[in-house]
Image (cartoon, rainbow, N blue to C red; front, side, top):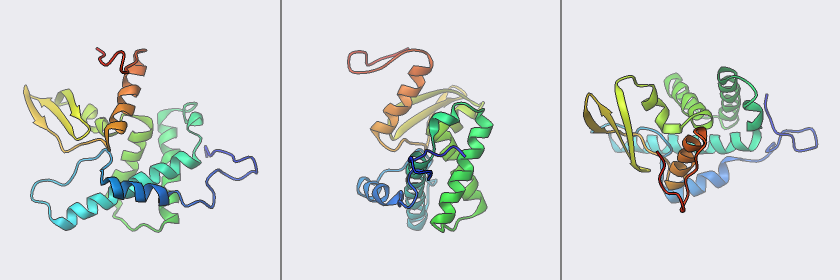
Length: 186
């Protein structure tokens, strides 16, 4: 696997609880990470479950960033990189003994792969052939154009920093940059 080495032959982060800091910071911020919330009419327990899943996702991502050497993932194809990310994520889930349905687990693994290798919550929208345009008006406001009509989606970024990180990924792919001196890009 693509683990970072701490110099003593053990992967970095071994023996460290990667979820502790992330969980408290996510709880205090109350944000969701790049996912679609429950639909209209969802019960309070469904929303609570969604929030808990987003906290878990953030903890898993933090654990992966602490243990995986992401630069090595760039040396292999996307399919192999996704497999390695999934294996490492499954190991973290087993360490934390997190029960979930097979469907929730599948979705979580895909979202984590999209976050590390792709454009996070934009990935499912980019894959939807019925969508002709994606408009992001803020971290919690993502619209799509479908059949000539704008629709507000349930997808969102974790916060403004998460959105800016994804913007940086997009503009760097075309050799551009965006910052205070150059706040717009085509």
